[in-house]
Length: 237
Image 1 (tube, rainbow, N blue to C red):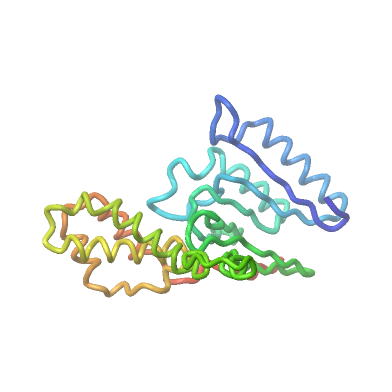
Image 2: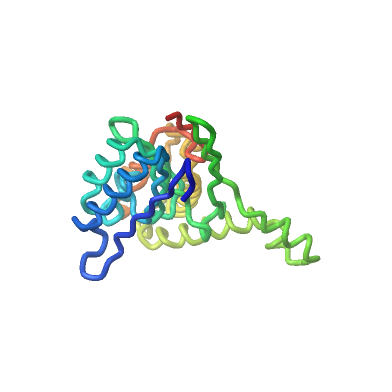
């Protein structure tokens, strides 16, 4: 807490009421916001679960219960934004009235990044930054090629895991290998917050839709995802 900025962290991982904001917690939040307003301080909010749905396929169980009530409070008190996670993918979203939320990708998921926030008067800049594993490995004198080229290793590992996730569902498909490769690559782009990188006119999207594969609805949701870069944003307030 400072004279000009307060960070408000809301936890809904409570025993017996998992993922749901309790009324008493909402009352506490309102008290904190009122105190900040009286002190002339801006508020930056943080939660593990999401306030907003970041994906039509990844929302159930990820958006906290009673999120609408908390969002209404944040909008009423001009909270700068909400920072969340939980879905492990990099994604940003805005409410109908323009309230901003950033869900930063997991450090364990390629490209293994965190978010850097720069606050200026009436402006916040949000930018993701990959952990420099390769730079660290070089300074340590490591000879491990996976560490020295960690970004490639991490991306390849992600694709390998995701390819293995779907290949079993594609055994009856003629293009099983190609479909699995396609899924792994676009899901890598999607989780990295770069749905702007894949081509929505790629015929493999239609191949997936014509199949009986379990993940075809998820693939179609990635095609419908707006082609934007979720790794940076500027919020004016």
